[in-house]
Length: 217
Figure 1: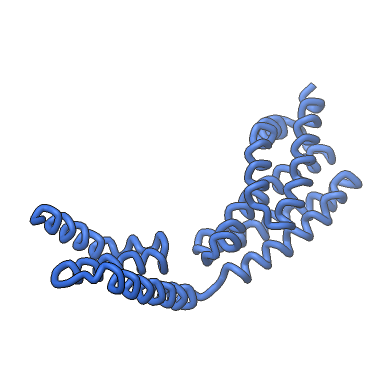
Figure 2: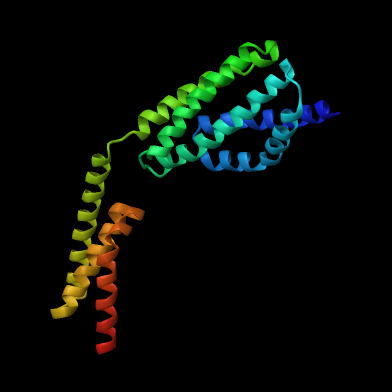
């Protein structure tokens, strides 16, 4: 009975994994995320059932499916970061990609020992190995490169703001200083995004100055 139920979950999960491969190939991380979420139940139930089953070629093939699901889950998160968000890999993510290499080796070993049913996964394993390598190369951008790019973006945003504000509003005195401080902060956010949180003290100074100016007016 458990084997029949496991077969059903494994079949559903395997079908989902096929489409995950299509999503990853075209870098559609939104669709990939939805497929992963929709297959969470099958993954959890199959994991529990296999834990109680004796070892066999059928169980080995199902174990490969679980491994591939976990790999797609990691690649989905990392791919979104380096491709869509254009951010470098973190140390933790590099470690996860290294772990994926180990998982792929494990999956390949199981596939080779699981007969015909296991060998059908070899192509997918090979493709995921290539994608893992590509993600590692794309994501390991030097931090200095990102810092330099962020600096240029901030400078460009600052120049535009200064030109627009001072050619339209014409602030003077303390107002001009306040506007300029605000322009610097916005420029930093444009260039550094979430990383601009490191400039929190400057933002607090601006907030206090703006509050004091409002109260005086």
